Length: 283
Ligand SMILES: Cc1cc2nc3c(=O)[nH]c(=O)nc-3n(C[C@H](O)[C@H](O)[C@H](O)COP(=O)(O)O)c2cc1C
Image 1 (spheres, rainbow, N blue to C red):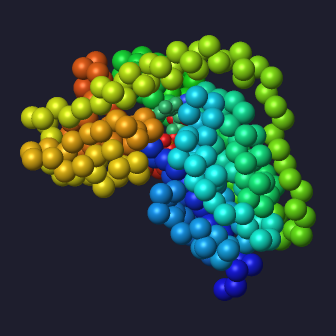
Image 2 (spheres, rainbow, N blue to C red):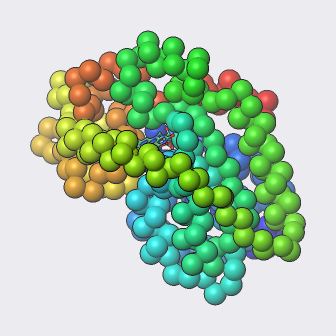
Image 3 (cartoon, helix red, strand yellow):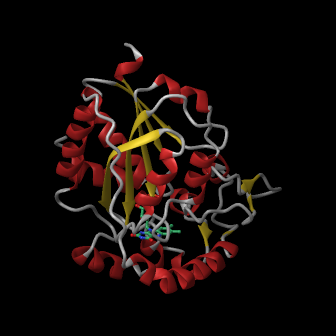
């Protein structure tokens, strides 16, 4: 198979929603293309990008923007010699603001031309830990705190078809989402939200008698916040992005940032496997 048929799905994901959407998108494209899927990490080899004819970039929306590691990943990327087609998606609990728009503008400086994009509203990796579980379940009836929309599977399929068209077309038409004027009105909420989350970040710690020292938190953290300790892993908040991966994926629910969230449900592999069965099993 030559480069013309290769697609790279690059994603950043905390609890796993963005990873799952990338996997489902990839599954739809597998019949016709060679699809590689990989997580954005600090030691990513940028040279490999040249091997693909299309890059799909996925990220969760944090305070209506792409997470810092995604912005850094693109900022540190050497500009490509030739234009390359790109497709961008974000996952969010409510809405992603101007996050895709701002990232698309950064991608174009690297010669990555965004031809299309998609926003998927789904489980809120932050809200699910902050609301009481019963409230999350009730809210989930109105909004998406713990679920996807009934049409999410269809939406992904439709976008996979659009990616297929992009692959077959010679067109390099840049598609920048319109500026959402109301997003700056969010800045006050964003300011307090970020401050609150920074406070929570400082409070991330292990409940020692729950921890089995399995070291999954150390292995999973893409920001290297966890390191081996004498009895249990140790946390340093310095580079923490508050992606919540360590919290959602600790098998013993031993990582918390407040006592109130000790026994709340986690959005872990099993949670997303069950959602995938419910929303995407026919795909
Ligand atoms: C630090 C943080 C900030 C977030 N900010 C937003 C936001 O501004 N808008 C929104 O709709 N969802 C927000 N969310 C929810 C996530 O975007 C959403 O749950 C996303 O699907 C998580 O993806 P992941 O499971 O791949 O990490 C935030 C979550 C976190 C952890």
